[in-house]
Image 1 (spheres, rainbow, N blue to C red):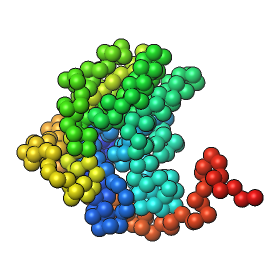
Image 2 (image 1 turned 135 degrees about the vertical axis):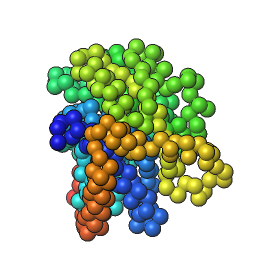
Image 3 (image 1 turned 180 degrees about the vertical axis):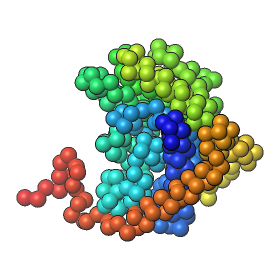
Image 4 (image 1 turned 180 degrees about the horizontal axis):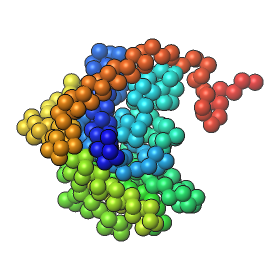
Amino acid sequence: MDAEKDKVMRMLRRMMLIRRFDETVKELVQRGELVGAAHCYIGEEAVAVGACAALRDEDYITGNHRSHGHPIAKGGDVRRAMAELLGKATGYCKGKGGSMHLADFTIGILGESGIVASALPVAVGAALGSKMKGNDRVVIPFFGDGASNQGACHEAMNLAAIWKLPVIFLCENNQYAVTTNFRDTVAVENISDRAVAYNMPGILVDGQDVMAVYEVTQQAVERARNGQGPSLIEARTYRYEDHSEGLNRILREPYRTDEEVAEWRARDPIVLHSRWLVEQDIATQEEIDGLRAEVAAAIEEALQFARESPYPEPEDLTTDMYADPIPIS
């Protein structure tokens, strides 16, 4: 397999991994096997995969509450991710982080946070460290349309612009902050229009097209590595599921129409990329079907690994903390 085919097929595989991973998460929540909040990334896979394809392993990313997809897109281990969600000691954070806190410093995954917009200042700090060390690493903080209205987001963009830090602010505009449409809370036509206030490029891209996301991110990464500072990319995308699993059972009325959901499902990023691969004679349908079967087996193996892994020991409760909150005299 030549390098170009390997790259675009890897994109398809990672989108499929994210999709099957989160479909499994949804099933686990419905069965009561996974306890706590779970926010599925289904429908948005092209954003994380396209963006991370433009990065090196040593580059950094940060995420948010909807971040199962980001570590997988960066090359993370689905077995350790699944184990973390099930609270097992073999998980990325030894079972202590759960669904909203996956991290792997060895491949640049600095972690996620359920606190909206809180990872953006972390990303800017990492970018400052990169600039001070002169190692030309870039950082992509992934955040949503809701986070784009938070003060921490604007402070982070302003500081990155002033110091020309190597950050690509990537807004995954799935158009709803829980149930509120972004057009009801954002004064400009596009979130990317806000870039002008910070003297950085603002790019609006089709978030369902993995190749389009890859290309604009690649340009922003090159700009950042060359010392030209940050960029703001708005990837217009859509989540097919509700904000979190089980939310539809408590809502009093729907916040979006069946027609709207169907329209976006018709532009499924995995289907679009698969079709493009066939049309460009890069892959056959048989290859794509084989990849899908391989991915299904990998996620099933990850689930088995997670189920068979041990839970953390009670005495591990306070390990990995900066200080022991229960000092023993």
